[in-house]
Image 1 (cartoon, rainbow, N blue to C red):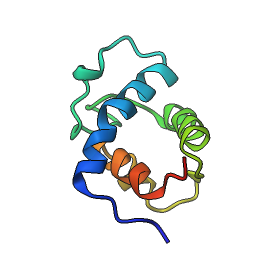
Image 2: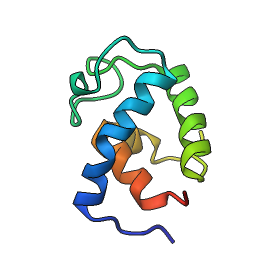
Image 3: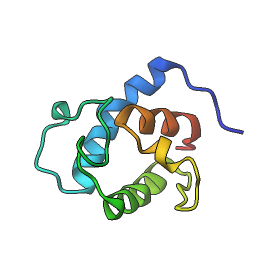
Length: 94
C-alpha cells in the first residue's frame, strides 16, 4: 500500500526530479525553468510518449518501483512535475 507523503516531502523532491528529467532526456534548460505545475506534455515542457517511457525507466531504477505503461493513472502521474514528485514520494523504496 502506498505511503501518504506530506506536501513538504513531495516539494522537497521537486528540484531532484527536475534534474532527473533534464539529465535523462538531455534537455538544455535549467531546473528552475521547469514550472512544477506546468504540464509535462504538450504546451508545458513538451514531452512526448517516448520521453515519458525513458523517464519512467530512469525513475524505476532510481527510486525502486515500477512505472507501468498500462497504468491508467499515468495521465495524472505525468501531468506535471509536482504530480510526478508526489507519486514518487508515495511509492519510492530507495
